[in-house]
Length: 47
Image 1 (spheres, rainbow, N blue to C red):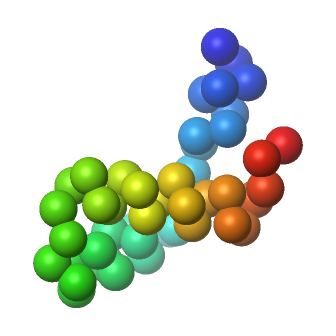
Image 2 (cartoon, one colour; image 1 turned 180 degrees about the vertical axis):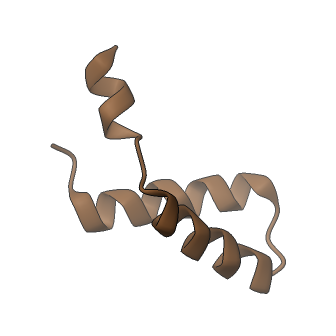
């Protein structure tokens, strides 16, 4: 469980960036979550 928690822990500054991006593009919350997860793995890998 701890490994899963770490995998999805995203720095608040990154979340803010993604939320702003999503808001600017008028995306819904599902798309916002997809963007956050995609952004996280692009920048931090899967380890």
